[in-house]
Image (cartoon, rainbow, N blue to C red):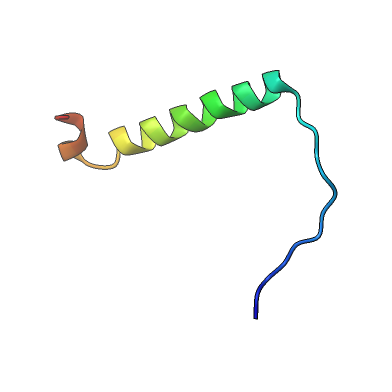
Amino acid sequence: MTPTCNTEPVTIDLYVVTALGIVLAELVSNSREHASPEVRAL
């Protein structure tokens, strides 16, 4: 059994994608930084 999703193509503005990428990168960076003391040493 394979899950499928039939959706219509979506067009997203380049500025929106860029902003979302920056926010996502910041969230990942902050979560890694505050995850454990060992990560801060790197």
